[in-house]
Amino acid sequence: MAFSIDEFKKILNAINCLTVYRGIFGDPILRSFREALELTVEDDPTAVRKSFGMLGSLFENEKSFNLPAISLFKNHLLNIMLADENPFSLAAERKGAGISGFGKLLNSTVKNDLSLLKIIYDFDLSRLAKSLEDKYSLEGFALSPGSLESSLGLEDSNDHDGFEALNSSYASAEEEILRAGNIKLYPQYYFKSRDQIKKILALSADWRINTDDLKAYYRQTGSGCFGRYWAFRWNGRGPGSGLTGVANPDQISLEDLVGYENQKQQVLRNTEQFIRGFPANNLLLYGDRGTGKSSTIKSLIHRYGRQGLRIIEITKHDLHFLHQVTAAIAGRALKFIIFIDDLSFEEDETEYKELKALLEGSIEKPPENVLVYATSNRKNLVREYFRDREPDEVGRQETYQEKLSLADRFGIKLVYSVPDKEEYLATVEEIAAKSNIKMERSELHELALRWSLWHNARSGRTARQFIDDLKGRLGLEDC
Figure 1 (tube, one colour):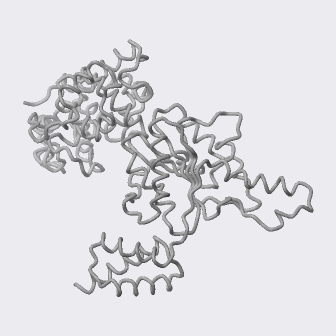
Figure 2: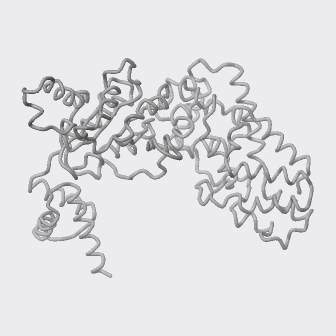
Figure 3: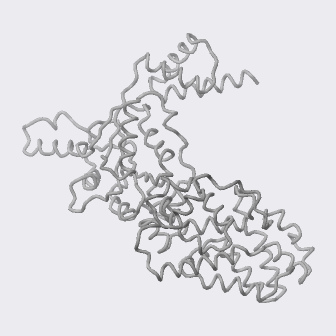
């Protein structure tokens, strides 16, 4: 059945009446969708052809999705809605579903918005294409309406059999807990993925009853960009300055890092104390290059991201923006690690004073949801000279002590030293086994030692590079 102009107007009215979620139509794809509807309502053939062209390019940047029972349009709308930062999502992140503080006005406004969003979500693009095709004879147009659904994956269906049964963590007993609004009884880390809340909404006939579901989701995953990304960079200069989400953070896992078991366990223990709300320390990993210091910290995002941990990487040259970074994340319910890689200072560099103030020493109390994890090749971070220890200059000792005081502000300092020959070869053997390399042990050792001599280093990084090279050469020989 074709759409009528009144039905188009109903969808536009729903869009225009949004309050809390009105910002989602700033998204380029949803904005184009809205413009296409507005042009279609004009009921002018030229305008309709323009709107039809918009529909054809609506999802050109939306290449993949993993909920095959719903259309690209529905999936995109859910993605933007769940990533939106608004008064409701922010309040939910900070207070959760079972904590008082959501005013009656906010709750009623959100429920009204969810009712309107359900109307928009249920909009059938295939019927729109058919309506335009029948009324304006667009068969010969650049993108034929008949192929619109198949070419864009926009098939709309009421058949949700393609969904697997909801995860066991959403069993009926736990659903009753959710409805009761007692967040303390929730299973820890309730939503295991964004797809789970999307399934709940896709199967719901009335989104107003899912208000508490959304509160729980925002509480766990965060609001806005912090719900969309787990890792960030701080760019303090030029266009796009500020926090930038990292869509594909390094996939390194702690299990991939061989050796340094005691150091890794201390990092994990401190981080778990942090994310569970117990006292924890700022952390400094120092030692020789290539020993896995940076990888240890980067691996934390994959281990604890679903538990509300976010990592923000900042360079030492941007440390004077630290106050802006902490201001952007203060008061959020999530936990943040500010990651500074390869931290060290020359004698004439003064950025370390900004870091000292954050760690300890400013009149402003450091945010409780922020820790600093740094790596360095130097234990004391600031380059030392023998003359710093000489007592012949007035104030020399005070200058020396000021430099040392930066490292002292890290409560935990862990050393990553170069492995000896046996440790290096053990690392090579373990990585080779994980890479399924079959080779005589003596030959493997000989090649690994030769590689370390060529590269003037024995380290976990050198071992990994050797195995990558060996695996590539063996692959070529098998071709």
